[in-house]
Length: 279
Image (tube, rainbow, N blue to C red; front, side, top):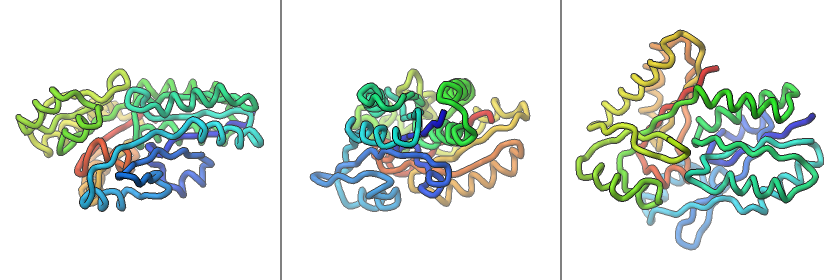
């Protein structure tokens, strides 16, 4: 069975890597006033962080169901099945869109997968699926492996300003108010598909150290892991952090990624994240 792999733009997998691994991508959009931009297609992360300095913070929108249906129909010419991997259904209707489109298209079997997370941690699932598909594995086998990965995937992130999350409806007003009054840098994570506070921490430095402590709990066994540092327009800081961690944890393969326009809208510039999974 020939299986295609589809994801959305919030996995933030670089274009050259998508092309190399034959990953198909559906973009979400950011909307500045009357102007809509598809992220990773019409607006880059760097352009986005520059734009928000001069404009009102945009809103975001999921892809139309028709865009999924069109892609699935196109893929049906060359593939028997699609594994379609998307950001958490608790923060976006994108997964639901793939599910709906999959039931509309009869020419190909669609297996939608809710990553229950986002960004390059979602990308871990996509990269694994693409490698398995290239090795000739069928959709059921790929989804089983993704479910297995879910057991060891972890991710935490911190934001400089909670108001973006609250304004976008991704965090309750009370949680955001308490955070801003106390000037804390809460560690956040996904729980039951939604973003919730994990721990209240006072400073950025302590929040980053706490992420490393949580990471150590998992990787100290010496088993091979891969990890990603994710930044919102803080590339230099991410590089320095990666260099430190790579020296300290030789059993882990590290990479750097970014919070692009859609997720950056909700987290704000300066956010940092750290995710990992057992290989």
